[in-house]
Each structure stands twice: as C-alpha cells, then as structure tokens.
Image (cartoon, protein in one colour):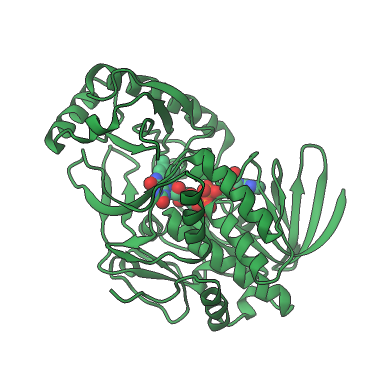
Length: 432
Ligand SMILES: Cc1cc2nc3c(=O)[nH]c(=O)nc-3n(C[C@H](O)[C@H](O)[C@H](O)COP(=O)(O)OP(=O)(O)OC[C@H]3O[C@@H](n4cnc5c(N)ncnc54)[C@H](O)[C@@H]3O)c2cc1C
C-alpha cells in the first residue's frame, strides 16, 4: 500500500469527471483523476455514444467552460464538424428537435489525453476507486486499486463522478431511488459502429418511410424498438447505431452487466441483418466496432441538499445558487414496453450547487449521472453537455474547499459561481 496527499481526487473519468479534474486544476488544485478503463471519456468513448446533447436549448448555447472547450478541440482535431440541428427519435411517434454535436469517439480519447495533461492532472487509468477514506461522516480521501497496488489518496475534497455513486454510497449517502427495484430502471443500449454506409441516402428517406421500416424491423423481431437512431461520423462514411434495448437487468451489478453485454451484442447482430437487407444506404454496411461496454442510462442517484425534479426541469427553473445550465430535452426510456418520454423544457434550466452536495456526508461532491435528481430530472440533466457542466462546477468547488481547508458545504455558492465564470462556464440563463 502506498500513500499520497493531494488537494482533490476525482473518481471516474467520464464527461463529468474529466471536466471536474480540469476545472479543479485550473483553480489551482493538485488533482488525481482515477479511471478504471484504459482511456478517458466514459460513456462518450467506452459506450460509443458519439453525440453530445445539452449544450443548447433551441438556438441558445447554455454549455460553456471545459465542456465547450472539449467541443472546440474536437473540431480542431478533425473529430467533429460542429453543432448541428437533429431530430431525436425521428422514426418514433414523438420526435423532438435538438442541437447535437456528433464526434468521433476515437478522436475524443486523444483530445482528453491532451486536455488533462496540459492542465497538470495526475491521471491514473486502469485504476478503480474502491472506497472512501472517512473520518466520521466526512470523506477524507479515496482508496484506489491498480492492477496490483492499492493506493491511498488523502484529499482536501473528493468528487464522485463514477455515474454509479460508488464512493457516495460507500460513504453512507442515501440515494434518491433507494426504494426502487434496480432491475426496473431505464434500459441499456449496446452501440455499434458500421462502416461503408451511404448515410446521405438513408437520411434522404422520408420520415414516414423510416417509421414504416422501423415498425417492420420490430415486427420481424430484429429491431428492439421503433427507432432508427443513427449518428454519422464526421467523415460521413460511418454510422453509430443506437438500436438495441436491454431491459430488466441492473446496470450496477457485474453479473447482470455480463448478461447485458452479451444480449446487447446479440441485438446488434439482429439489427445489422435487418439494416443490410431492408434499409436503403446500409446494403454494404459491416460492423467495424462494437462499443467496449454497454451504455447504462440509470443506476444510483445520490440524495442531495436539493433534488432536481421534473418540474424544475420542465419549467426552466433558475436557482440563486445555480452552477450549471441545461438545455434538455427530458429523455426517459421506459423500463417496460419500448416507449420513451421526450419533452423540451420551457426554457433553459439550472442545476443548483445543492444538487452536488450529498445529504449527511461532508468532504464529497457528486457530479454527472449520480448527482441529486429524480428519475425525470436526471432524464434532462444526464446529457453530456450538462454532465460536463456539473463536473466542472464540482471540480471548482472541490478546489476551493481544499484551498480554504473546509468542506464543499462550507464554500458559498457565489464563490463557486465566480470562479466558474472566470473559467468561461455559463452559470446564469443566457439571454435568448
Ligand atoms: C445508450 C445511451 C445513449 C445516450 N445518448 C446520449 C446522447 O445522444 N447525448 C448525450 O449528451 N448524452 C447521451 N447519453 C447520456 C450520457 O452519455 C451520460 O448520462 C453521461 O455520459 C454521464 O456522464 P458521467 O461522466 O456522469 O458518467 P459516465 O459517462 O458513465 O462516466 C463514468 C466514468 O467513471 C468510470 N468509473 C466508474 N466507476 C469507477 C470507479 N469505481 N473507479 C474509477 N472509475 C470508475 C467509468 O469507467 C466511466 O469512465 C446516453 C446514454 C446512454 C447510455
């Protein structure tokens, strides 16, 4: 066992964790970032969900700071062309217009390597955060498992960006969804990258025809739901397909995840058979890669000082202690049946600092998919643009707590907001 002391430990190197680590480092903290995978990016790279949402509400940009910088670096690196209008769930019965940012996940891995290195973050890949160090109800650091070695990091403040609230739950935080059956959550999705696709031909199909095809795919048992969701690669020759649906399993349990990975891959095979046979543009397509892991939409949400609710999000509520802005949409896939709820908020909504502070536990912040919200609130907050904004805010707050030798709860939200603004984040609703 080795021991080290730092200002901030961030567990989880997904969209939220990367922004937390960089935000904290830019605020002057010595930061360690722990990621169990061999690359950064979380769901964006590991589950190949190759399109950011949440940066815009209609035509109003609500995401700034480190997250926005990542988009600009992706464009410079040739891994994206920019924000683009998109109709979400086009082949379903209730499509929604959004502004997305499609990107190449392989280029994102490189962009994130550079970003964290330039910020001076000490990154540990292949390293699992296993449990918090504690003094009473205060988290004082993290125990991490490398391939062989166990390391203890004492820290001024800790950010849990594991999406599964791994540290928060072990520190004793209550979860908002504690009473629910963990197998009755939103379905998981295995993504695949197909090459040699004539995307323009597919996109040119009338919406009615896409609906007809999707219904036929479902009737044939080859499509899991009435969706023909396709994200095209920046080069325009590859398609990332989101057409599988694995329900009834717990995305935070390794045994269930094993079954989900295998079932997800089986569904990809069926969907690709259908696409190649019946869908114009896919005649010559082949699977050039399967996502390294299945995409998990929902596990544990920590119960924080504020629980972001459906009405907060739908009504575009603005809080005095806002540290992030979201654009939505509210996007909840139904655990049973194959439906989904999609809705545009009435205006950009805010995430209060209190939603990053677990109730009953000090020394710890939560960001991204395990922050404090109801299922529907998280349905709008989980998009990567917003996950990055909450991560950025948690990182800055952790750095301030370490500097002032206090807990994150002891840092006034106005101080977090000030530093975030200095780092080009958007904390207040932008003018329309
Ligand atoms: C199928 C699917 C489609 C989606 N579509 C979109 C979309 O089109 N646009 C959009 O913006 N959002 C989309 N989302 C939502 C979005 O991808 C997630 O909500 C978002 O990635 C959450 O970010 P995060 O950083 O909180 O978590 P994650 O992206 O899950 O990252 C968490 C990271 O923590 C690491 N980790 C976990 N436990 C540990 C540990 N103990 N120690 C060390 N590391 C650990 C993981 O390996 C991972 O890298 C989709 C999600 C899914 C599943």
